[in-house]
Length: 635
Image 1 (cartoon, rainbow, N blue to C red):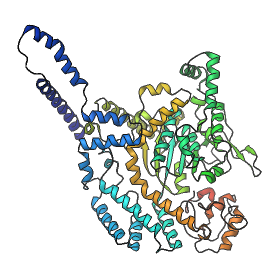
Image 2 (image 1 turned 180 degrees about the vertical axis):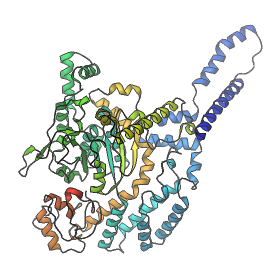
Image 3 (image 1 turned 45 degrees about the horizontal axis):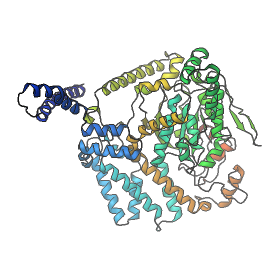
Image 4 (image 1 turned 90 degrees about the vertical axis):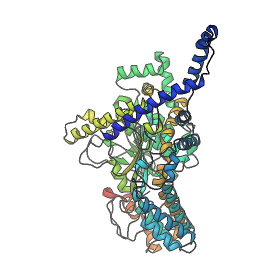
């Protein structure tokens, strides 16, 4: 309360100072004029208004660079504006000063000096010990949001230098010739398991969900896109598009050029000819008459045109990205709420994405959808466990865990990047990394209203959660206003939308709207780039080094297990060919995954090193239906 009062008083004082400076500036800019009636009349009619108008229209450097920051079209332009603002506001002095009460700067400074010394002296053992002893994403509280909202362009230089040195030390270990391949692989495998992994969660959005494309594009261009991607509703469509494409194909998709919108265009043209109304006018008429905006059949055609008949397992083998789609059924038994290449390997991706979307009756009606899969002969048949699907919420079933918790179990995930685009939540949310506050940036005063709205929204969500805990919240309200709970550390990205954007909710996607929403999504990521580098740079360097070490000797990476036994296990589970060689030289499935593919058959045997996501030990004997890959990680 005291802080808010102080901020208000400070703003009022700043406004008074600006008024005083305004009059001084006017007096200095207008020279004395001899008193002559004709000249005085002319000066008061022309000179004074011109001077006042010019001063009013002129912008100070802070406002100019703030406009540049808000209207940037690429990250380089945004970064230049952010650096200029830091210089003008002298925030670079804060970045240069390592001390802060928000993190243990003494610990970070000491570890940084030790790592630099070990690298200069080429002390490999010291580097191994230092990396292993600091495998914590939030070591010394260096990921605290306060450290990334004080400056426009980044955080303390000490933190950035520390992360860079740790990543460099891992690279030195990876390229060292003094360590044997097996020991190097064991080290990288254990550090990968201990540090954990990151997933990108794309949540809902209707037409706002196209912002997810911009989020993925910004992360991909900065080298920050995780290999594990999760989608819900519209986010499931975007996640499917991303997960089925390789690194070389993604740039065209993320520019919107690789997305087929012919199904939407044909539907829009047909309805426009039939009723002769504008696109938005027809959309509102359909909602009022039919109760929904778009027939789910159109959505099915669009998703199928872009994804094809790939299954979860085929997409994983093609792109090496792990796709997760969250769904739920009307009945409580049998079907997992999370579909991926482990829990539903033979399910067609496009049917799972449609099932996740068709659960929104206000947009796509209430017609049921059928989830399809491929049988052993490659024929497309209905998925045996399938039932009527509806969207999953944290309050849908109190007896089952969140799908995000399931992801953490399966893939050793302990960090979530959440892209939130749900129209009914956006007005009440703000990105975790939003930059300096209103008074620091001297931004327009009307943004204070946005902070008040977000405070009200947080209070409403808190009260709704309390009612939901007491089981007093109606199902219809619970469905839309109670969101999934993230089980671990997370970062939320929220696109900034205007009031007019809500009138575009019923627009049919076109090439122009794709470009518009992609840019919106990119702008939500740029302020968080520095924070994401601090959180994920070490993880991604471990991942690259681990995959490189595995590729050097893919056939011999076995930990205390004979090649004969491993080949027999692989041939039995279908992962190795008749020569005992892995079909996928970069990503091996673990014993627990093999058990799952063998229909939950438990098998005790030697542990095969190379599980795509984690550590573990020997002789794992796990029922994959309960915790597939939970100990060893997958993907």
